[in-house]
Amino acid sequence: MSSSRRDFLRAAAALPASWTAFSTALHAAAARLPGAADESYWQLVKRQFPLEENLIYMNAANVCPASRPVLDRHFEYLRDFHANPSFQNRDKYVPMRESLRTKLAGMLRVSADEIAITRNTSEGSNIIVKGIDLKPSDEVLITDHNHPSNNDSWKVRARRDGFVVKSLPVPIPAPGKEALISAFERAITPRTRVIGITHVTNTTGILYPAKEIVELARRRGFYVHLDGAQTFGALDVNLQEIGCDSYSTSAHKWLMGPLEAGILYVRAERIPQLWPSIVTAGWSDHLKGARKFEVFGQRDDPRVVALEAAVDFANLIGMPRVEARMRELATHAKQELVKIPQVQMKTNLEPELSGGVIKFRLKSRSTQEAYNQLWTHHRLAIAMTGSGDSEGLRLSPQIYNSLEEIDRVVAAVRELA
Ligand SMILES: Cc1ncc(COP(=O)(O)O)c(C=O)c1O
Image (cartoon, rainbow, N blue to C red; front, side, top):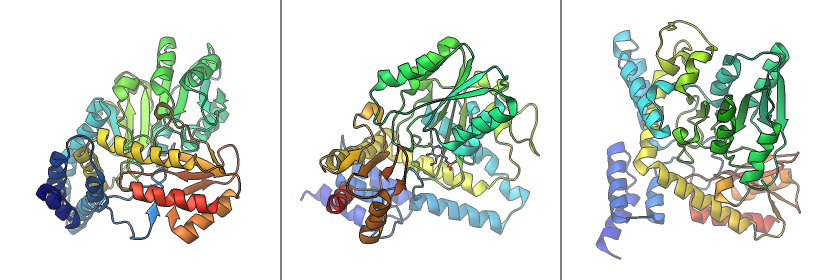
């Protein structure tokens, strides 16, 4: 073994607790491993997560654990806040919030004034649903697999205001990018005012061709809202390139950040056209940009610091590298699972039609039984859908998982099948 390799493995084993130690070790590891990082690099990353030893946690689509550097920073500021809750001590959060906004904007390739710091995807999407002016003659186009926050929310508002919500069925698996785009093209009418889609669905993991769907809408001048709960922190999302009017996401999923912290992007031209959902102390007609969507009353300031730490953590590794690793894990899982004859894969294998969400069912077992057995016998923490067209078991690996864990999961499924 070379001495640089030995040094690196020693650094990984030492489990650097502090942010500085971790970032130094990670930079050193990256410098020694030009190009693709190897398993020892990812072991170093994995050791930053306080996951139980025998747990295989593969449910990023629901909640990710936060890393130690994020938790340390969160606790540090929570203690500081409660040790001295004076206005004077809390003044520092104003510039910290702006620093976070700038980092989030950089990550998504938009401007800081287009970012609102919300509490989760649901809140952000509901701000859009409630904020757009719509007349009874208007139509909103969604899909059957949109999350309720971008689905039922439209239907409930439509009951009150009388517009029409049209929902497209979701093919399983998707027949191809062109077919997905043309389904939208066929459903658009002269009355369509909004398309609300999910970037990657939580149901069967389709990656929608958002850029192309936005182009359809832009040509006709109507609005596209994108639910990014399953892409932010998983894929290297470039909103400038996608061109949507708004994008809503949460920090506690793939970004590995704190609970109840979210991001809402609204394109600059659209901000004046949208009504805010909540108006309270802190409101002014002169709030700059998307800040008008984040006046919610007293905020949990230490949580905002934790969100900034989660962004720093992702940037330290680099979002292209996070995406590449997440895809490596997900692709390996899909490729091995489809070799099991009893597996019916519901997620597409093509990278252009999928992200980190993997859905499959076993033809030989009830989904509920399979889910229970995987937890009881293998301590495999995943998600399941019990019935309907997206019935099945859901795996969603993130960078704290390993190829070895994927192999253990596949072996457990094979044994069960
Ligand atoms: C696609 C999608 N949208 C929205 C949400 C809601 O996220 P939150 O509960 O953080 O608001 C989820 C949660 O799983 C989701 O998968």
